[in-house]
Image (cartoon, rainbow, N blue to C red):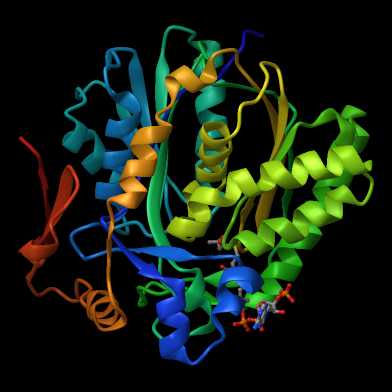
Amino acid sequence: MSEVGIERMGFATTGLFLDMRDLAQRRGVDPEKYIIGIGQSEQSVAPSSQDAVTLAAAAAKDALEGEDMDPIDMVLLGTESGVDASRAGAVYVKELLGLPDRIRCVEVKQACYAATAALSWALDYVSKRPRKKVLVIGSDIARYGLNTPGEATQGAGAVAMLVSSSPAILEIEDDGVFLTAEAEDFWRPPYSNCALVDGKYSTQVYLEFFSRLWKRYREETGRSIQDFEAFLFHLPFSKMGLKALREALKEADPDTASMLSERFEASAAYSRRVGNIYSGSLYLALLSLLEGEALEAGSRIALFSYGSGAEAELFSARVKEGYLSRLSPERHLKMLEGRRKVGIDEYEHLFSDFPPSSPQDYVCDKRYFSGPFRFLGVKGQQRMYEADE
Ligand code: CAA
């Protein structure tokens, strides 16, 4: 089978952020609990004019800069904060990007696992049609609610990947092992714009799924921890990934353990500042690692994808020669540095200004318009979007 994998990557988040120290102070919590205990220092805050669609389109624009759009045959959007119960958000994304009508656009759902399912479909697709490319995006806004335990782990953002048979960044190996078993750890009922989560139980299920898959992966491939130059995790908050890494490190020699721990920190750098972006989170860890560390060509990376409910996959990938020239670390750092810090009152106001789940019209606050794409509001029960000229 020919090589398949990721040729380009892009990232988007909102223009606003909350400092976790400010949140800790208002909630009467020791800031060290958020920063060290949970492992988050900032979280992106979404005004209502930014949703899973606008963030997905912005990440895709970032990934596709200067790219020939012609080979793109399909847009797959993995999201669990989708904007419509029927229509795929990918259809809006396609329109905002100005992609031609001859392509397919589909939304994939299974909690934070969705983008991995989409990626796997894309890899199969391009291996059968080596001249075609697929745009895969994981885009979400993580909302748990004001004054809830989950509040410290909210976030907003999207990661886009151009999947092709010319994987200039990462070749993805066909060695994935999967696991699905019902777990009431996290879900979002249709009437709610916030997720319900049993945080302690979700950590337990996540760690159990990781251990079972890591065991099976080693049995099926004959590989061990020494075969990996980095371990990447879905990061609902960075401490969760660290707990799973510590499980895997039990069998590592000290040098390997120290190298993998260092690389884990590099992979969590963006996530610590953006927060949970659900389906894009694992791929944000990938981008953060690749933009923050110089890895040798051929380095093998393990990727653990987890979606509550619950479903998980462990697979591997190999870094391509010259991958950094296809990425934009300066641009992404500038994007993070360029966000405006909001105070707690403003954050709480923005959090509560959410489009109603009833037929009435709604207009987004223009003062918060930012980014290349905006959700304008709802008119006559239809969502309206706008792109920069
Ligand atoms: N200094 C340093 N550390 C401190 C501290 C202090 N002063 N105070 C507490 N801590 C530590 C605690 O020891 C604990 O660390 P360990 O877990 O290593 O023991 C950590 O801080 C958190 O403390 P608590 O457990 O007491 O905190 P909490 O009750 O507020 O809950 C949480 C924390 C469980 C992470 C909660 O924020 C939460 O539920 N978040 C949501 C979790 C989540 O997203 N789950 C779904 C996972 S998968 C996903 O992304 C969903 C999907 O598929 C869609």
